[in-house]
Image 1 (cartoon, rainbow, N blue to C red):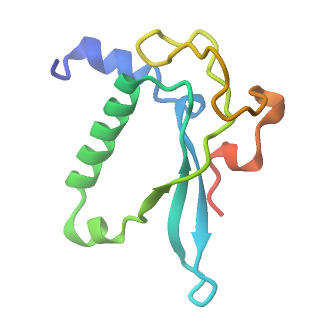
Image 2 (image 1 turned 45 degrees about the vertical axis):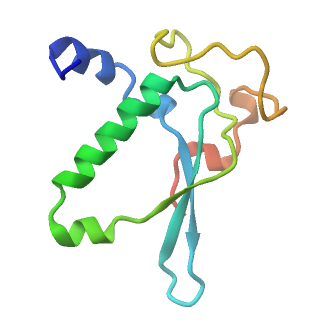
Length: 120
């Protein structure tokens, strides 16, 4: 499916902070520069939403000028996020969890500092 107005509206509906994975930066002690980000995956995120975000990230990166492409901070997979599934999440974007794969309590009261999408 191409990016017609219907798909743009569908995707725009979930491009909010509560649908974004969180990340934590790892800083090089000597240079005080960020080495990479550890991205915390969302256990309730559907394959379709993952593919859509990946495509948007790739298109964004491809649109950057040469020097900016090289300056992009690499990302690595980190611990799963405890961020809860947003209320009224569309069926295409979120999967129904039968049990928490991390065996951690899931809910806003359990969010770690790392789940707030804050860079360090």
